[in-house]
Image (cartoon, rainbow, N blue to C red; front, top):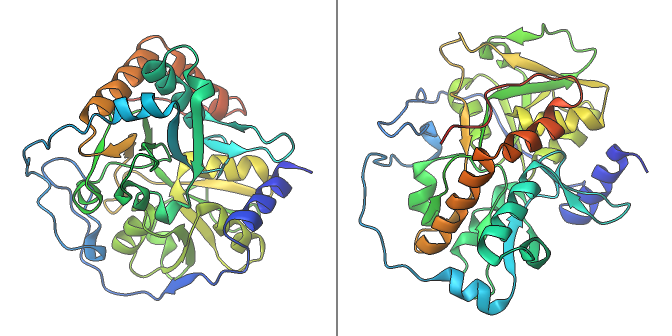
Length: 321
């Protein structure tokens, strides 16, 4: 079975291939703005949130003690984002840039055997943060699934972000034969059927920056690939690291850059590990792990292995702090 076949098989097992996507016709949406804290506002998709507010820190729940008592770390991931976090159906192994990071975090929290004490919990993209609202010692401890910084999420899901581990701009994936230049202004998406996962910054950016586009919302970015192959959409709009994995599995597609000079182009997303707001000791351990792999170069080496080995030369993607 080739990689694309594996992807489709995973989708059939997890979300199903017959789910009806949510389609939003072009509407008038307030322009996207940036808050003082540097977070991107989702425009009309959420009530306004004061991103500059700094509420007092809650008491620490000592989740790390719970994890060590349990004997394993529960991590929410995706299994369909090839190169980031992907399960190979041929041998069942999960690998990718974010899985390398999870292993480093597990080592920091649980010692040298930590990577063998991780239990992965597969989460659909549009539900990944809902897991942070589940209480109890057997709930997911942290989420490592291409989650971009948004203060609105901190309020809604009562979460905290780690230090940043990845930067990724939004781009477009289309069929090779699509009549579109390699770099376009985001206004080129107007009037087109564009797919993105629901409850993501990509969908928020799409609706806010190009309200003239027809947005197609699905549960997972990989589900957009099925619609693209069927000819039901014009393209897929999301972080380029996700698009890279899709393009690597289907060479009949290509990635189109969104011109950064276009004033409506979304800001580059910053990704962080997510924990509950009350889990401050756990967060400190996660930050220590990210700091270590950033300093010793292994985070950059992992990124290069998964995203630059196929001829790309994407640079400045690992934040300095």
